[in-house]
Structure formats: structure tokens, C-alpha cells
Image 1: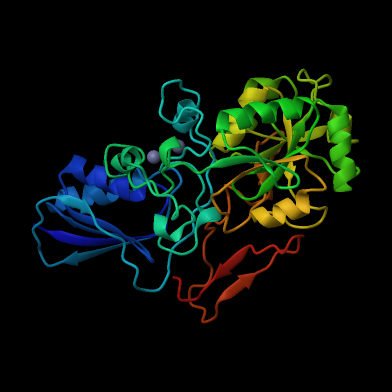
Image 2: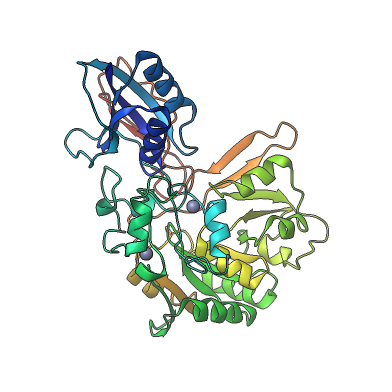
Length: 428
Ligand SMILES: [Zn+2]
Ligand SMILES: [Zn+2]
């Protein structure tokens, strides 16, 4: 059989690329194997030439939504015979030549399962699949395999392992796979660090009650801690402003659903699309004269006609939002002017003066990130990224180094040690 080696570079790990290749190969009767390397995805494919051409075309055209292919190198090999198409263990040798994958918000399937009574991940606050969940914030090194992420310490239960090894399951090779039986654990604690509950149902129920009482919670999200409070409660918002020493800078809001949001702001089709997108950025939106949800706009965004709103992008925020049913303030857990806290001990020490209670978990964050901020121009609907972070970064925007000997480091001029672009001349 004609045999080719395909080397695909770009954002191709942690996005369901290997399972996609596997399924496509089986569908088309291609034999061979696929493997992750530190320099991308490697495929050896054997079939008739026409079929191999079609396979290559579909690999590019039908690649998973979150993947970005930067290079596709097709090399003929001496003819080989394979009995099947398999996923082989990752190859760790070589020079890293891969794009890191950004964190992705909760996908529709995982969102549905979170609320589906009887589902084994019903009310599981860390459900993910190959199409959603943290990536960049939990990775230690490449290639993107569980042992190189902070999921390493969580052993999969038999059911999860079954999903992980079933090519037809959407959790096939999902490195973040876990469930209540092999769970990432939630904990509610007071500001002194005393544990109050380890039972997720109890924690969410108590958290909702505490928010109703006007308490401020520090909640560990994907990229760090957020401070969360009832956006309809004047005294809670004022307390948060006083404690944060932030007299007027606007707070972002977390909305339980798009219907509640539509009662408060003007929503264009572009806004709706971005609100529902897997990137789940903070969207800047123009307020209606009388917001229906009861949010206290003069305290949330003083002197402004716009607010920043986002959809719950983690299962935990989704569950808490659905329990609470009102917009929540969700602002970075930091002291004014400093970066977001993401280490549990640092957060407990530093946020204790700001938060009344903490909801933490035992999955470590390796790289902190704030929420991204986006707006659309009113007429043309052009997207303007005001802060490129969770969901959008890191990303690939093209290389202009071809033909140059030196590497390039481009630094932003904005706050918080922006690190926007780094590339090496050998990366061509
Ligand atoms: Zn998912
Ligand atoms: Zn499990």
C-alpha cells in the first residue's frame, strides 16, 4: 500500500485531534497509526493514493473547532502494511514545536450532563471532555498528556478509563477526564481556612445562601480565584468595593443564561454568539434603561452606560449560577493593581481580608489567567479584543520571521507584565 508520513504542527493537542484522526481513519479504511510528539501530531497512513489524498484534505477541512494547523508536512515513505489504525504512545524526544492550547469553557454536552438527573456526572463540578475544560492553566510541559498536567495526581476510575479508551466516546483520550468516583474535590472554608464542608451539594447550597445574605466568596476558577457576590445586593457590592479599595472601576458580571442577560442589555447577534461561545469572554454591553434582573448598575459600573458580562464557563460557576439564578459579580481575586491569585495558600492569606468564605479545589493551577474582555463595534460588528487572556491565549497569529536569523520577543505596553508574543527563528 502507498504509505505517507503526515506531520501536523500547530494547536493540535488537547483539542481532540488524535481521536478525530482515529475516527476519520477508521471511517475511511486508512491503516497505520497516530501519535503525539513534542513537535505536533505524527501520522503514518497507508491506503490507495486517492484515498490518502482525501484523508489529508479532510484532516484539514474537518479538524476540531479549537485546533489550529500551522504546518502540514506530507512525506512519502516506502510501502508498508498495517492491520489496523491505532493511537500510539506519545513520543517525547525532539525540539518542542507546538502551540499551547488555551483553556476552553464548558461545552454544551458537558453543560447538559451537569444538570441531567441520573447522569453519572450530575452536579459534578469538574466535568470536561475533549472539547472543553482547562488546558493552558494546568499544563506543566509538552506533549499534552495527563502525566504532564496537574491532573496527574487524579487516577481515573474504571468507568472513566473505559471512556478514555473508547474511540467512540467524546472523552476518548480526554486528559482532564474525571467523575464523582475519581473526583477533583471541592471544599468550602471560612476566611481562617477552617474547612466547613467537603460535600459538593451542601457547598453549592450553602454558597447560594451565603450570597443571598450578602457575603463575598472567593471561588477558584480555571485561571485563578474570582471574588463573587450578589450583583443585586447594594450592601454586598459596596462592601466589596471598600475591601478591594476599588471605588469606581467596574465589576464584571456572571449571568446564569442569555435570557436573563437580554433583560438587562442590548444584545446584537455578534454579542449573543460570543456570549454562547466556548471562549466565554467578558462582553462589554450597553445597558437597557431599566435592567430587569435588579442589578445595581450605579455601584457595579459607576458613571458608565455599559457593563461587562459573561457566561459561566466552568461547571462549578454554571452550577452555582443555576442555583442562585441572579447575576453575580465575578471579579478577579486580587488586591487592586496586583495579578490574580491562583495558589491556594497565597489566595487564602491574601484574599482573607476581602472574602468571607472560600470555595477551593485540589487541582493545582500552573499558569494564572484573567478573563478575556471583548466588545463588538455597533455597526459592522467587528470584534475588538480589549484583554486577550482565558479562552483566546495563547494563540497563533502568524509568523513574520521567515528568512530572519533572530528570535523575536514582543512585549505589550499595558499593565500586569503582558507577555504577548514569543517565537524562535527555527520555528518556520
Ligand atoms: Zn465538554
Ligand atoms: Zn471517574
